[in-house]
Length: 231
Ligand SMILES: [Mg+2]
Image (cartoon, rainbow, N blue to C red):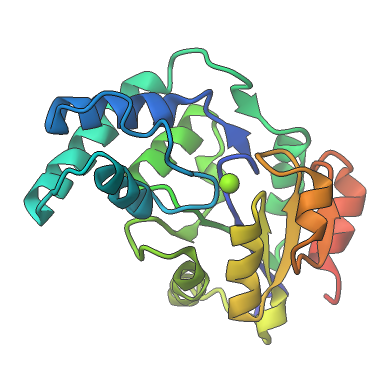
């Protein structure tokens, strides 16, 4: 039995990829559906990649059958693997992330996983690029369900298959940067820590059900204490 399962969001929480995802999505969309700027007015923060594509298709008034969606997914992943190497706005790790993950990796009773709207393949590419993939042993991704609320139970189930189980739902902690991250924790009965390093500031995140709102993850000792609270 482990004392905590920690489920981290990626974009705006652990890192920002400098709009690599946006560039890859936009190029793939234009190649396959002939529409430029397909994601310019699509809300992305906290959304799953699958829903982001659905919304872009709707806005462009394009219909795509499942085979076209699969082709889009494949092409997006290919382009993303290139785009991640280019510079972009605010590209990099969020403050304190590396130190925190290193500290957590030494806690035997805690395991870190992912809950992200990213498709699994770009999620792995992104984390490998920043040398963070090694810290995560399980996760739930945008391929697993269209709605983020369904991802926490999937991640917890996968953790269980790896022998990582906890006593109570509240021993699962979701760390994310949007109201949708907080919501997926609340729905699952998990605790949540919201960080204002993404698209929402602290005031906006305080309007949610988040158990704690932080400016960032840089106060390692304090964050460790919060994450391990009740252990
Ligand atoms: Mg995020």
